[in-house]
Length: 406
Image 1 (tube, rainbow, N blue to C red):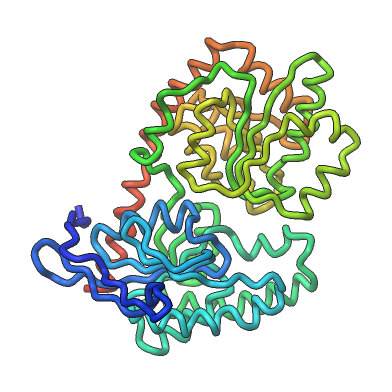
Image 2: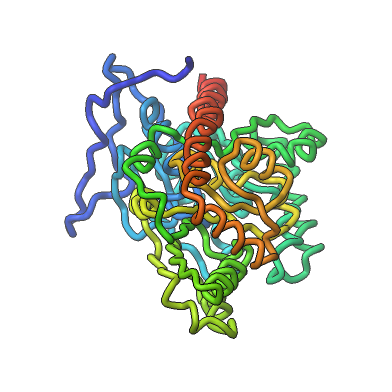
């Protein structure tokens, strides 16, 4: 294995400003048990929260064993968490300002870290990456989704063809300048045609992290669960209508929702003609850490993953699907072929038409009313999760980093 287990001899020392807060730039490099200096790497995201599952919990916590890791991302404060130095970055609400200024501001923050390798997580940071490369830095571009197709899937984006042309212009230059990581196999062919130096790192599950949430659990409740980004495309309106149909049949189901509820979606939910009838059944817990969110899942009978059909989602694995299996939570998932092959193939849940509230309601009821079936799905999920391990994906990252930094 490429990964080396090292013990921190001295954590990065925070130099105090005269206001008592730690300086976000000046740190002493961490050394390994053997006394060798850990190489410094820096992950950059102007869109994702610092506690993003893939960036923080998957990459950074694992990399911190071998590297001195800094993360610049959307976060309220400068802090060190689980050995990772987090530097806050302000996310612009105005999308035009985001496109015009974000990469420029991120570049200056990144340069002050003085890392040996920079790992980008957003397409809007491509100009930042190109500038870092010009300055002689090693850069990796992590593509979380099929961005090109995603432009056409988002209704709020104006002048889609013009934006696509601009993105493609910068993307081609990035591909020639830096290796890329893809989170899915579905868009490998696109980047192979460009001659990209690519590595596929799938969003599989970090099993040791999720094990504490698989036991003790109570899977015989009338509660369903979702944790993640709250957008119209995540099927909350369809799930709400399914709850209404179940209530009319005499079944009261509580829905625990973990995530930030954006104003636009909140207005759409409140505009539903049946909202008042089921609003007290939906518990919005707000944005929580991964640990806090999955603690709530211990008392759920069903995990929901009702993603609406878009070009990007149909060909991409949802992280939730693997996480639900890892905690032994039976799931109701969209019936895309990619999802069905795993969820129903492993016997860990039921796949339904994501646009059909009646089908969603029937699937929820089938699991809740059949405890034996739910228990079988729980055990099947736990067993199947062992096939989809993040540790194997992380080895690819260590290999890539080793090649670039050797």
